[in-house]
Length: 262
Image (tube, rainbow, N blue to C red; front, top):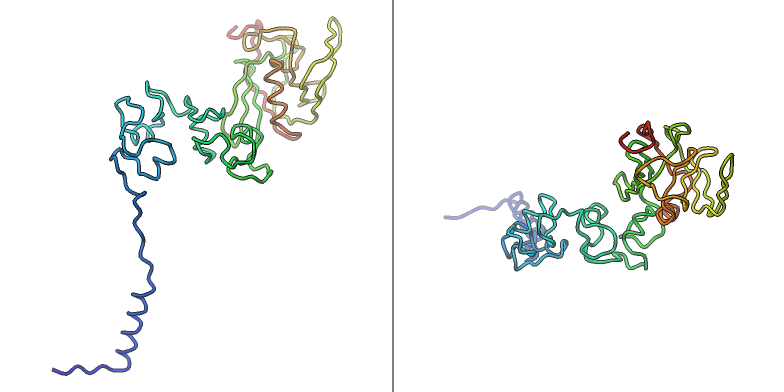
């Protein structure tokens, strides 16, 4: 039997050959596999620094893939959550490392000389050596709980005890911004004179967030004429993290009898 190939048929054959030659074939890499069948691919085992040959890295009876899927740490065991584990001990817990895309096994993911926690706290991308502010920052003061929360990219990074204004001189409620930063300042008025107060961050005329060396009632009761008192070490950290223009939210209710819960 003879086959007659027309010019149109030859054209179709040529097109099919070209498609076969130049159509990319998706490669299959060993890293895509799950060697230990724990539900975590070998690539993700590298990301989480787990053992690709041991389905239960921390030996707590749960497969690594199951722990990761439910936000438990595959390293600590005993039911520790990801946010309770800091595998590389850089100050940024493993849940936050995952959120910001940094390496949970590297203190300084981008190798720029600053650890991941410091970079994130100041709004920088821990994966990018360029000194460009990427993430939004916000301060929230809860008068009811007498706590100050610090957020980066909408995620809570710090949680510190504070003392806000007393019932007769409450810290004002509302939305404000940091307008001034002063390393050291003197506060004085009827019945008080406090020199050398460190790490002052003004959010409203006459109202500051600052360190307080004259008491240790933070998180327990109100103690001020309206400013937000912090432990000096905590105030120093916040001062280093935030810039002029960072928003400040004052929420909650001032405890009626000064003591938290009253």
